[in-house]
Length: 103
Image 1: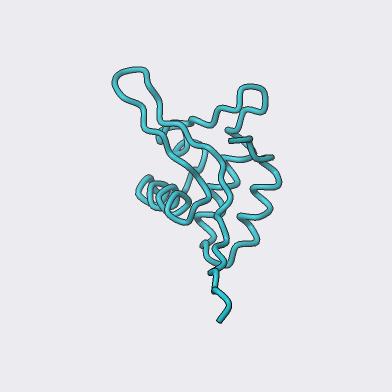
Image 2 (image 1 turned 30 degrees about the horizontal axis):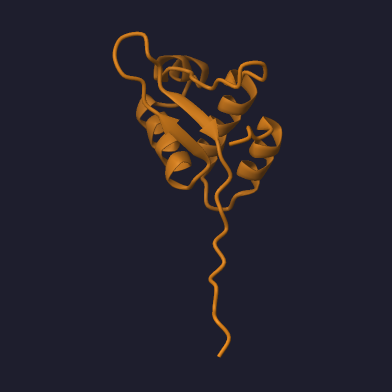
């Protein structure tokens, strides 16, 4: 799957009426601070996000990440074992248009 431009992704996230301001702040941090254009990696730890988003609780950060995944804005790949980090990929939610056969 081709990588999305992180700034176009962020613009779309910020325009989404379905996301609250905390979730948009987490999305902004992911896009601006932690996305690596050269490698395509997006794998900040929860500790790193917690330190960067000072003033936001860890529980809120976790809820926001979960919401971004559930709404289709992020794909999450969990690391297994020591030294394997959770990675995220930017996604754009699909707009599903129902197909209605002609009568």
